[in-house]
Length: 481
View 1 (spheres, rainbow, N blue to C red):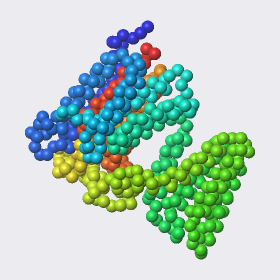
View 2: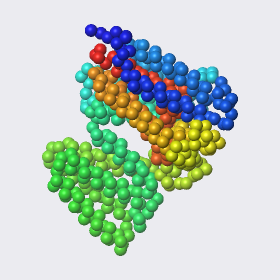
View 3: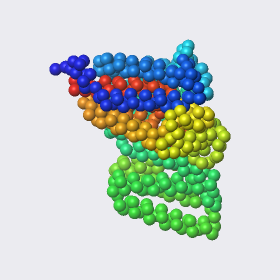
View 4: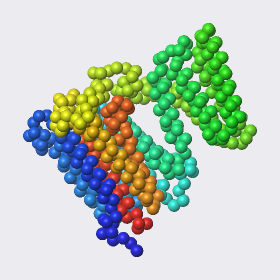
């Protein structure tokens, strides 16, 4: 028997809806605090940001209601069509959007400005879920995996061409969903290693240890250590692990002792050891006919290739303002009046809030506009200043409960399509939360990622609302399938 529309409404997860309403209301209150300039009339003027956000809240709630009224099969049947339409819109944006602060990501339609990148998230999640929900689909097959990557990277590339790096990086969140659906954990390991290599290589790129560049030496040793660890974890080959470990320690020890009296470049030794390790792994692969050794060898080669490509990517690919932001985040440069200004002022605002904050509309850092973008990307600093440690913690707990609830809903789905979409939604929200909080506290570079439901912006609020309520609709009628 099918479910009636009344049964579907009863099955809606109202707890998640309640969390959504609490967050958009709390976000609006925070925007009021960030926009207040000691003039209540200006705060609620028709052109003010609180009023504009209130209008977008009404639009978003109307769209949310409409999504819940549409049959769930609509989202699966028309997922590819929605994806194609958004891709076309992204491509058109590259050529039609005006240059705003160095990026072409906003379509201006009279008094309305829309950012198509915010809507590409739910479209991509739908398309990926549709593909992975196909009968007989197996992610382990290389062809299927490449097709999924194509769906993820296509909008990412379009957004990069709009020079909107922060929005493009959000699509890396889909790899968390892919891991849940069976993707090898080595892909996540590779991603973590890439970040560690980049940070270590950049931070110590100009530090010399005699004639040795410390950054290259440390990363080379790290790659060697991880390679040996992978051999142990993957094949439990104690003999190979002992041979590689003892040889590496002996050679490094002797080389270090010699370099103390006769200085020379130790990177040659470290890279030579890695080369020998790769040749030994290839030998083991041929001798035992085990291809996993070759994969580990390729990981080592790729790691070193990545290390030596860091400088090229950093200097020739990244924009100058992106380079300086990364250097400031890594402590390589101190630019308190330039790239580091936002983060420094944000830290001051959050720290000045103390335990319980200065109170609603009583923040000084935000009222005097010391923090740029304080009602968009840096909205969390307003929470910290006005509500203090207690309020900041409450917001983080609210997001934690919200994301955990999404994971619970995703896990209980009866179809692959709904489950994949649900995990995509949870991953996107988690990525936004982690990077945004990292930005305002100086833990990650400033890349312009909004805090969901809190940051000012109609496109952001509407995009997140659509992303969430499609999943709520799928969950409400899961028993039909």
